[in-house]
Amino acid sequence: MGIKILEIDQITKEFEKDLKNTATSAEVDSLNIKYLGKQGKINHLFKILPVKTDPQIGKAINDFKSIVQDKLSTKLSEVLDSAEQDTFDVTVPGFEKPLGSLHLVSQTIKEIETIFQKLGFVRRRYPEVETDWYYAEGLNIPKDHPARDDQETFYVGDNTVLTAHTSNGQLREMELKKSPPIKMINIGKTYRRQIDATHTPMFHQFEGLVIDKGINITHLLGVTEYFAKSYFGQDRRTRLRPHHFQFTEPSFEIDITCGVCQGTGMMHQIPCKVCKSGWLELGGAGMVHPNVLRNGGLNPDECSGFAFGWGVERILMMKSGLPDLRLIYSDDIRFLKQF
Image 1 (cartoon, rainbow, N blue to C red):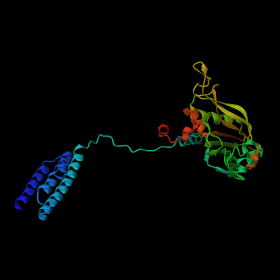
Image 2: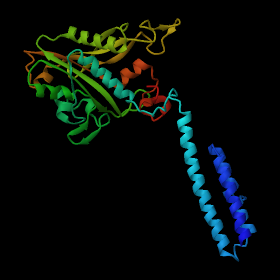
Image 3: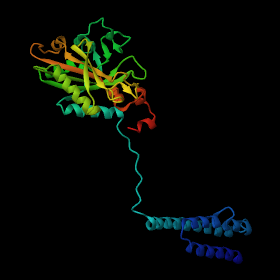
Image 4: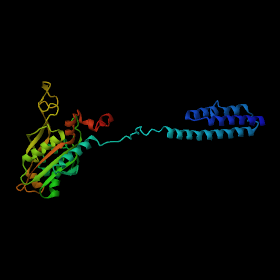
């Protein structure tokens, strides 16, 4: 028995000596294999000593095994702590946490709002689910107008729709303010039964409305020109093109010079593939119809105004050159992280 315990003592002394000379985590791992591994010294003791016939031998080996495990664990902690203190380099850059950002539509809305705030416009948000009066009837749109057809509009009830435009904000703003001056920008979601490379069933519009005494088309031109140069660049120009909308008279389409061909309509002696004529359609505008002013509670003999409604995604595509509107609402991080 004494000789057998002596053999355990000798391995214990060897372990203490090895542990004392250990300075790295790799060396601790090596000791772990040497003493606790499948072919290690402790398993070797179980094989060569009469554990089954002498329980005290088994107990002595297990006690030694526990001591080795505890001391190796403690040594590893000490080595790792020491390594961090000795090798830490304060000049090494830290790890940046991944951060999200505003969606490019939200970025565009924020930019639009900032531009119009500089002109004194107040940001409003009006309902996206609207009654027929604010959506159509009050905007001088007759019941037989194609825009009120259920093939064009999302009806959620007999007299309730998902707004296909933000012009419902015109009547609500007049009711809210009750009298001029009015200068508001309404930005919100709109819904139409369309989907292709340049249309989606849900998109965003921004509606501008200015009402006061003596407002005329030159004021509309000035606001349009200011926005175009602020958002697209100082080299861009705008023009009015006659059109027809039920809620404005006269009505116009606002065009802006193409940013690809710089308004020339030509690229490398061939027609520009983007505009083909030098101009791109920005959106609709016009002088507020007298009937709309009356429906909003204002007297068209005492005041006048202009309104415009343009697509947020449309101007984003025109500025960035996106080929397909549907990319904006994709979940492809390779595309989204560009913005």
